[in-house]
Image (cartoon, rainbow, N blue to C red; front, side, top):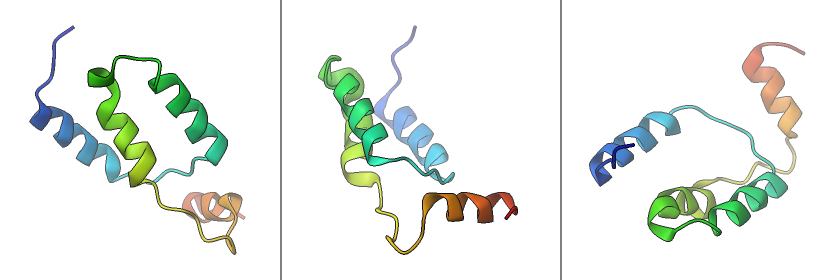
Length: 74
């Protein structure tokens, strides 16, 4: 396993950020709970993305509505 530079990690994060995902609050909490058990240097970027980078879904829209529109299905 090789260590990636910060620039490489940021480039990967940018490439991934172009896709849009719906993730529930309990899923975020579960992931964060796991990440907090790992060495900080290994997970700091992921923790930052999950704690600050996620945008809240409009409460008038359900996640299933968004997912159906993305897939082009009803």
